[in-house]
Amino acid sequence: MFKSIGLAMPLAIAVSCFSAVSVSAATIFTDSFESPENTNNWQVYPDTFGDWFSSIGTGIEVQTSGVVVQAQDGDQYIELDSDSARGGDGTASTTNSSMTRTVNLVAGTYLLEWYYQPRTNTLGDNIIDVYLAGASESLLTNMIDSANGAGRSGWETRSATFTVDGLDTDYALTFIANGRENTLGGFIDNVTLSQVPLPAGLPLLLVGAAALGFAGRRKRS
Image (cartoon, rainbow, N blue to C red; front, side, top):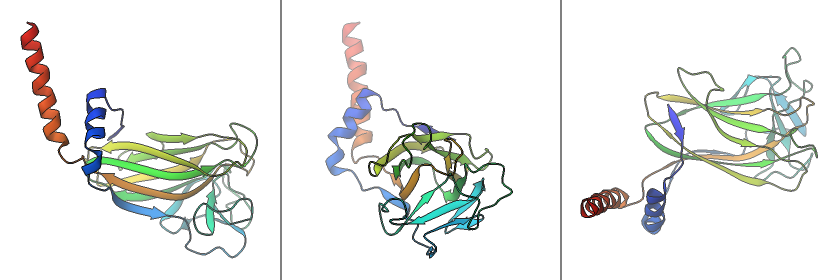
């Protein structure tokens, strides 16, 4: 379905050599969680919020800038160790909640960028994990990123690169709180998913590198 990117050295060098002429990444979506507007300082959405739906737990907790921290972008951000009050699902078995959105992806390489900030001073209390799943897979099958920190020291940029084979049309992108269940957890803001094209000229360089390697082997033999 997908795999995380771990570039071998020759390919990493090729990307570096051609980075100046590479094509810009094409944005699939970007979301700073500004709509719908939350007018209650913090509010839990048990079903949907914008293009995201609540897939596990009490719901998607949306806070306005300044309630606990300043939003990284705009006026709203997300906390997923969600409260059962102010709209939260009090019958849910866990406050560690998840939000999921469906994205249409073709075969290729993708870059997920998002911002994370821990809320409490306890390491392991603010974990946010990110998963990508094809239509035939469960939501929490393939982890593509995990953030874990302590102390409100500002927003941290997170990024994860992965590939999909395109056998599925729709993929589920899920953020989930996986720390201690106490309605206090990591914050999420400003999520962007982009498709990353191969740098211009990279295929020719790879073919050339392969040819040089073959010639070197012949010479040594």
